[in-house]
Image 1 (cartoon, rainbow over the protein chains, first blue to last red):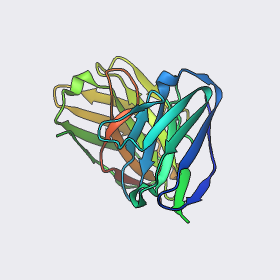
Image 2 (image 1 turned 30 degrees about the horizontal axis):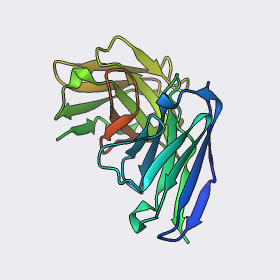
Image 3 (image 1 turned 90 degrees about the vertical axis):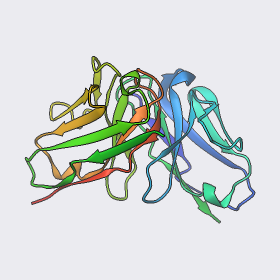
Image 4 (image 1 turned 120 degrees about the vertical axis):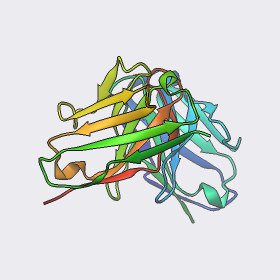
Length: 108
Length: 120
């Protein structure tokens, strides 16, 4: 079973700053099978990145994904006030298609 | 426009059963895998189950294996989750989500969720 560990648990930044979120897998996975989601309170998650680095439809280019093997990163180049939310990574290489525990991005 | 509308949630006693439905529209339903994800109050996302576009392949989290059954009716564009032997720890908002492709993958559209509460 592949376990995903996200860090940090909470990230406090100001609008305009750059955010870097980490997702580490317990074993190597193909980058084809790693996604990132954003969730705001009371809302369904929204797909940001799939295949580790491909932006989903309608996602601004300030969001980017990278990584391979066991280490993956979601970067947000210039934080907009609407970007403050919880972010989850997910692997879909194998069952269970587990999510990480999430990183809360809060306004400093 | 892609729409996913869940229904069937509610309050049920421990050991009881519920069947969730997810009505899909705006895309060719049979061409995409579907997934159920749940979120307990104040907690993170938990993948529950997925099914391929044809329905031939199904996958379950260990926490629900043997108690939950995922299925789909491609003639009705509807996804189901039959939940038996419910426990307090199954209390959560249940989301259905559409995959990017016919096999299980990342999910690009989500429903609004339906609340399931297991309590006596």
